Length: 553
Image 1 (tube, rainbow, N blue to C red):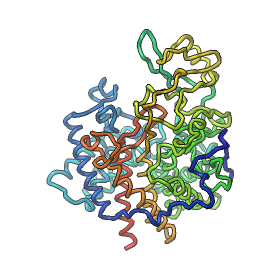
Image 2: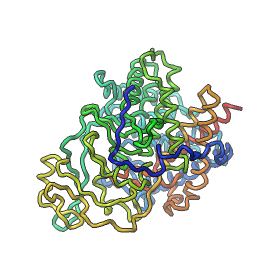
Image 3: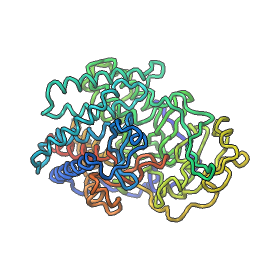
Image 4: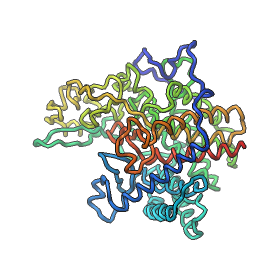
């Protein structure tokens, strides 16, 4: 089995993957804090009450921060996504996150037996809201321009099917939407590649310029863009195909998992024994090069990407026992999953809640950020992230500083467009053969907090409980559940919006559940803030904790 190994221009290493000395003992999950069924039930009560609060704000148009498209089109139904600019950020239609809000509501409804303190009218209010937002997603089942149909459809229509009060006509409609969506998703698969293509769009670099005294942000194309990009997030869409009787869909999913397991992983340069596989965010099957659109750099460990990787292979391993596909010629997916578990366990040895990228706190993190080796897809979003594009307190990584990049990374068309333009920092963007998007002066010292990503932690926990529930191996069951308990104990105690010491002050008032998630650092979006999919997986993890304990008692 081919494994990609890239030594990322750095020889030093500070305390994470592959950097633990042999005589240094890793904290055992056996000694982790206890997380009980009662704590899980209390979290679900809190989540129910919070989302009723959020529903009320949205219904009465309070504290809303609307996407420009939502303002421009009053007929568009926009969806709560996160907290941004001291308000509830409402996302426009056709975005990958839009299934999570109704998905959260369906999760709460389907787990109502685990939730105490239901008051008159609350279940009906959540149901009415879930169904209203669900109606807006029918058209997505036909949208063949995205691979995210699992997130959009399966995490909403699919979640609704677990609610026992869903009437038969609505259930039939939802099942049909799911089947239509599967057929649409399958069109993005090609037999010659053996994978579902993730994106049709080409990567562009965000550059901020001054034009006629006005601050402008525009995007510029690259000289060597990807041609068949597949991102690790796509592993999360395979369950959508696998939850079907169609054998062709199973073959597509297993083929995708096969090529992903072969090509999307690397090892930290200090991990000489190649024990802990780390996932790239993106692999271009055109140039056959890996990289990270998200993450500190092209060779780094984006925290949520490791979650998509782990959870995706949990669903694949679970499906293996139920599928009629001959798996003889496929990799040992379970062995791969066990290696991924080892990586997550190792990465979380010192803290169960990761920073947004596991490499961000290394002393030489800036070297990972600035690495544009020709062995990779060259571009990562962090290259154009100037300090004025993010909040004053946010520090993306240790050593954060303005970058001087080769102008040749941009297309000729982009270079022509940038001729004579000045950055927000009052300097030419093009300086000889160099691209200087953020000036040359050091950034302000106020950039001090390297954000964590609680959404990644919640994804880990949900995946770990899920595997622990269906595995027949008692040792693996105990290990997976113990690590999940450790994560959930920390999230519950220190990262709920009513308890977070370093969260945003109004998050609990707006109705969010989990503080300090990080969405898209490279684009300066949703950093150190509640995000709806973080709540989605946190709620799921609590439900799976309860079901796991029931399965062993």
